[in-house]
Each structure stands twice: as structure tokens, then as C-alpha cells.
Image (cartoon, rainbow, N blue to C red):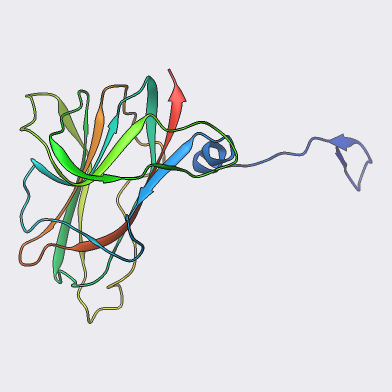
Length: 193
């Protein structure tokens, strides 16, 4: 214990961790990123709910808590206004996609993730009432603007939602002329129910 310089009484050492830091420290946080460093994953040229840029399915018995979702443009920049949105589904709906490797954020602690992740994912039409919007927005990026490569955070705040066992998270990105190409890092915590 540390002692106060004023009264020499013992004071407890306090660790002030955020939700994300705590989950990483405890070995409960995982993430996915581009399969090949600096090789982008491309979004769509219009919104199609059956084509997610990133899909993460909760295939285990734990609850998933989204921590961050950071995207930055690379390669051929879409230019102009880029739209994005995140949906959470109570029941996982997935057809196919390109697999992503789910990795722990603290390789020294914790077991493996119970989630699966894919990019350029095809999903069937949502069952009525199954999916809800978590967040959505737009960013304006062109090659000539200062923010062309700046990351865009798509989650309102860490821990903004819970994905129950058997559910999923879908991240959509699109621009009207050229689909945006991204490097990305999406992270979540997994907690026992």
C-alpha cells in the first residue's frame, strides 16, 4: 500500500481502468482486423442488408460486448459521402463470407473466443423483428481532404450493446459511386452469462 505524504496513513492503490482496458487485462477481449496488413476490405456501392462489410456471430454461451469498431480508408478512396451502419440480431443469420481470424487482445490470458467473423458476408433477408439498428452515420472523405485516412469510430461508446448467445453483429459500409475500401479493427469482450 502507498502512504500519504500528509498523514502517513496507508492508502489503497486504485487502478482506474476503462471497460475496454479491464476486459483486455482480464483476457476477455478479442478482435478482428484485415487478413493482410494494409490490404483493404471493400464495402458496397449501395445499402444492401444482405451484404455486410463485416459480420461477427456469437456462436458460444457468452455474451458479447462491443468495445470498438475503427475503420480507415486505404487504396482506392470512395470519395464524397460514405455511409455506415451497425445492426444487432437476436438470432444469427449468415450464409457465406471470407473468414477472418479472431485473436485475443491479451495473448497471455484467457481462452479462445466463441465468436466467428467474416468480411464481405452474404446473409439472408432478416426475419421480421430480428435485427435492430445500433448506430449509423456518414463521413465525408476524399483523397484531397485532410481526413482521407483518419479512422472512423462507428460505435457510440464501448459497451453500448449486448449480443446474446446465438446473436450477431453486422457492419455495413457503402458509398454511391465507389465502394469504400477499409483497414479495420473491431473488438469485443466475451462474458459468461
